[in-house]
Length: 195
Image (tube, rainbow, N blue to C red; front, side, top):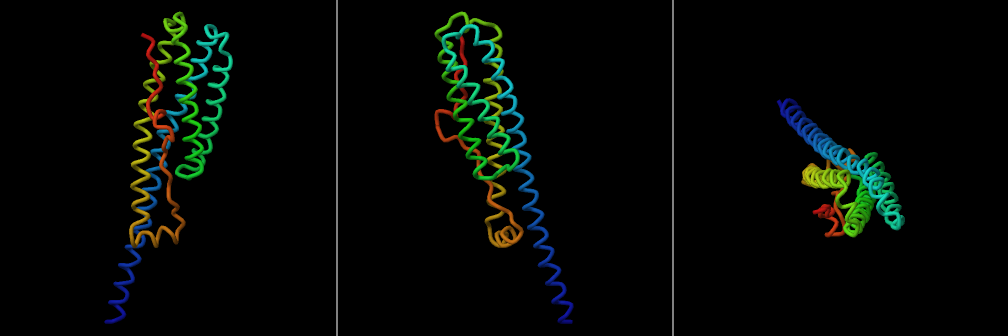
């Protein structure tokens, strides 16, 4: 009789541990899927930038440094995204991505501020369309980042509560990093109004 009670207790404990492990796996997969949505939107943003620079190039001949800075910032952001894609949630990768995207937002903001001084560029139909697409993409990035951060918070909460923390530590479930922008001004979409 004692053997049966011990066996039942053991089965319940193993079942609970399996349930905790599976819950952690689902939460980790959830934040990785949420990061995939960020990847889609950031890739879209990065793909729009060369067209934007090409359109502005003819008008901003004397502002070559600004155009080159935008391209360099885009390349750094693409590199940061590639690193974060390889390790979604990794603190170092998320910080590099945040810094690179922050720098890109700042250079884009500078490009748009500079374009205000060129009425022909402001009135260019292609430039207006690209800026509208970029603005829309910035909004999508914000929503995707919020979904990712919510998924990371859920995962981190799940892995840190007791007794889940024992299972998480034993099976190597590391904490995931939120995707945050360091500069509060960069949290806003770049101003792209040409009216």
